Each structure stands twice: as structure tokens, then as C-alpha cells.
Image (cartoon, rainbow, N blue to C red):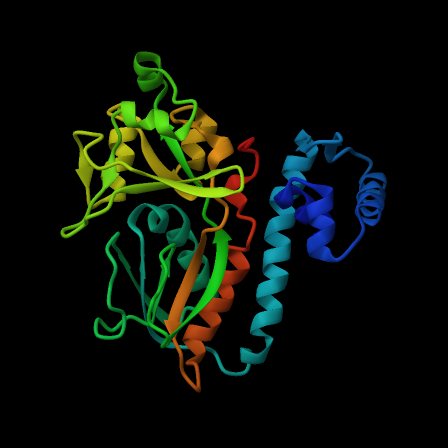
Length: 301
């Protein structure tokens, strides 16, 4: 089950084997045995890619829950005799927080009902300690050395727009084409740069998007609504728009220029004795949002 889930998340038997420290042949053998035991084909495999069958999609969804529960059980065994309790104050970005973090906090609350969780959703950077936060979940770098960062899922950011927008204005073929499009920007007071970042071959590149659109906001939720309405293009995380991409409400462009060096992370203060409520929540979050995020499965890029 673990080998199958890793193969799906990596979209490659070779990459799955590398992460599991197995040869591609050993990965294939394990998958063949699993399919023989279940009596169904889970994956359609070619030399370039793997695709889930209908049975494989159903099996993966349930396997991910089981593997996550096993990971959580193992990480929480040491706390069974001393149930975590207290007040936990967390901050996360608005759209990502609503779509991905809120459901996880509900699961956490069901498992640890004695921990009171306060979640503040904001797209602005917060000075955590003075504001009384125990932790932040973010895709931004934390400059202060007094914080520990635990990496979560990869944050793949794509340029997206509505089908109607592309019908009216065409599709950009290379990043530089965006300079001729209306682009929706996330803007905060004092913001001086509006750069969108891309991968072009072996190079990391960026474009200054200032002045390339008539709409900007300090809210990711506002940008999302404007993008759906066809007002322009925006650069959003697949964590925020995966369902829109699958349904066809939004379409991604320049998918061959996506950078894969960004991650979501959970940040918390560096302490000699980490409070149990913080440690348990961090372990819970890491188990739910591993390196290969569930929301990217099946997007096709």
C-alpha cells in the first residue's frame, strides 16, 4: 500500500523508488503483487507516466486515509497517557487556510478535543510572538532564526484564468507573453515589487508585473473570485484551485514553467521544551500535508 501511494504521489516509479530507497524493478514487483492480490488493475503504466484506473482512484483515496492514520498513531503513542490540552493560536493564508487547513483542524479537534484552536486567516505577514501565535502555516520564508520550520507539501504556483478569458484574449505561450495580458496582483501597503516567478530550463526567472492589470487586492479570496469571473489572469497555488482546474472553471497555462522549489511550512518558536499541544499539532499537520500533496493528484501537469 505504501509503495502504491508513493508511486501515485510521485507520478513516477523511478521517483517513488528513490524516495523509498528501492529499485524501479522492486517497485514494479510490489505493485504487480498488489494488483494480483486484489484482482484488479490499479495503474496504467507506460514508459513516460502512470495513470490511475477507476479502481486505482478509489483504492488510493482510502489508502491515503489509512496511511495517514497509521502515521498519526505512531507519532502520538508517546502522548496517550497524557492528553494534550490548552489554547492553540494559529495563522494561515486565507484561501489555502479555508480550503486545506480548516478540514484538517476539524480532524485534529475530533482527535484532541481538549485543545482549543483559534485560527486566524490572513494573507499578511504577522509578527508571531508579539501577537501571541503559537505557529504559522505559510509558503513564505521566516527570517527570524528563533523559529523552527517544518516543511509540508510542495507549493506549485500556476498562472490560471477562466475559459472565457482565454477565448477573448488567447493563451500566453511563454512567460513574457503575460506582459500583454491583464494580470491580477496580490498587493499589500508598502509593496514595491510585483514579481511572478518561473522555471525556464535550468534557470529561475521572474517578471515584474507592476501595472499589468487594473485590479489588485490584499486578499487571495478576492483574486480568486476575479479570476473565476474572467477579469484577468492570476498566479495561484494548486492547493487553492485544484478543484477549479478539475471542474474546468479555471484553466492553467505555462505549466511547463512551474517552479517546484517552494514549500508550505509550519513555523513555531524554537524552545528547549516544546509544549505538547504544539508538538502534537505539528506532527498531525506533517502527516496530513506530506511532500507530495493530495490536491495535485490527477491534474495532469
